[in-house]
Image (cartoon, rainbow, N blue to C red; front, side, top):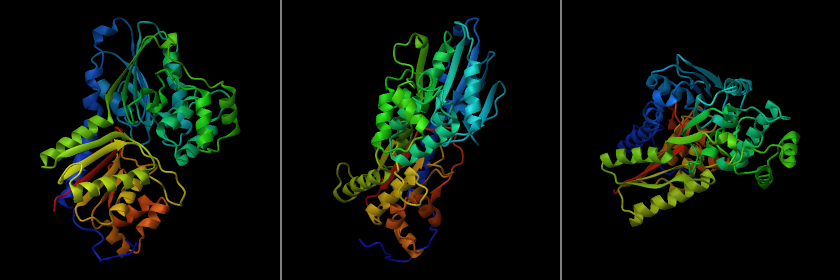
Length: 438
């Protein structure tokens, strides 16, 4: 279909029942991963601590809320430090909350990482370190390996974010250029016990990919990281390339004795969030189907594929009949080639809309559960059957916006963005498609 207007429509239509359902599902997904609910059941008992101390450390967009959950549930003495994204702090009385930059790190994050390492030095065997980790921790703990600088880490992060590499690939590179990730934080806690509680924001829920695995062993190598840099043609600082080529950035490997007393528990996952959303859909009378909680790939490609599935459901009743809701999670990527601001959820949604071409029975929402899509203080956006027509009426060409990686500009102009503010959790991307029968 040509990329031009068919009918003039209002720029800001009233919220439909479908859009309201989409937002309720997203809110339920976020609520299911709130630290106040998912952290307390995994805490040790004071009796298990014995005569040792409890030291709380952590990093990530949810770490401050996790720390508050620990304080509210723990009756005995404790102390500690966690670092979270600017604006994601939660008041705590016994655990210090530091804030730093994400996704490009800053000096505040570097200082906080140094303080974390100092805090866990000199511990005893009867001490327990409770480590609270969630998505975003990689950027919030930017302590560089010897020979590298914070500026090197900043340049690397910018290059990785634009490269199209998967989150697993990006974190593989990060682990081998860090003084704290890739198991090094846990090694610094030795001989104390370490219990790590994780809120997963990565496809597959692999602990070594959540905040680049500061307390878990890493089987990957410098050679693996260097291969990723070469595969995507990532322009890295000379010192970064030299460290990877020398092999001196090796992380802590499985079987290392310093990690023998470490335990890891995942307390919230993307799958749990999708199941919470599915329950909301079913209560509203829509059968819900989860397509996957770990979908990856270019956001525009994933959007086009979802459009194909949605059309098949709407027009053929396959593989399931309408009405229904299709849900998916994971973490797509955007290889930024245009002048837009990227944002994988808005890029997915714009590609979905371009492929659907205003299908009259399909509505959708795509948003990041942490409230930030890419580097924008916008969680995502909503798509309706009239979205493209309203864009055309404003002189906006959807295909051009997609080619320019300008999903944020596109949905902002229509007033269709989803803005939540800090959600204080992070279980990755959330995508929902409502398909009506008539």
